[in-house]
Image 1 (tube, rainbow, N blue to C red):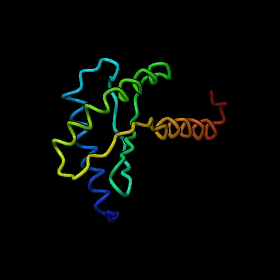
Image 2: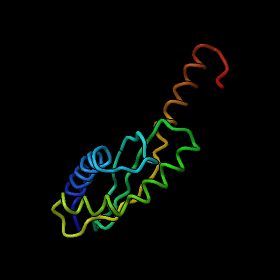
Image 3: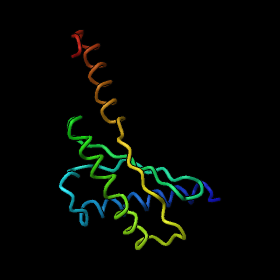
Length: 119
């Protein structure tokens, strides 16, 4: 079992490497402009939840998620070559809604301050 500091370092390294792989290596047209916002690694380093955000609409989001799920095996294999781990974590992509939620809350606060109704 890994300690918390090591898990954080591994998660940060996975995020850096995946960002580079998505930018340079992945050729799937379904995966457009996405930003990796964080990675959570299980204590046994078997799984990695990769959180991403995009500016695409909800319709395009399902297409992007399908592309990422399809590319997960390729990305895992490439991570295995780049990381010095005994076991390369299985990658699971999750859409991070915190950015959209933050924008919505900011709009509500601005509307409350100005006295206008938010949309």
